[in-house]
Length: 83
Image (cartoon, rainbow, N blue to C red; front, side):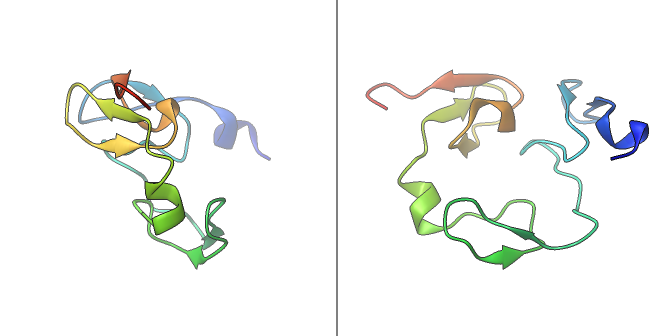
């Protein structure tokens, strides 16, 4: 992995620091398809949302309202009550 690929980036939408893959506020398109860790599908959609992933939604962004299974996918995550 190159040094550039491991450097954090700043989201132009919310200003949050993110990984080079981006987060749900403004994801960066992957350079090649990746395998979803929840359903195993190969996709190039950075906002891929499958049924197995929906079952694991635990966080909501207090800034934009998006839902995610992992807090690091959101700019201002808050755990959903009861999740």
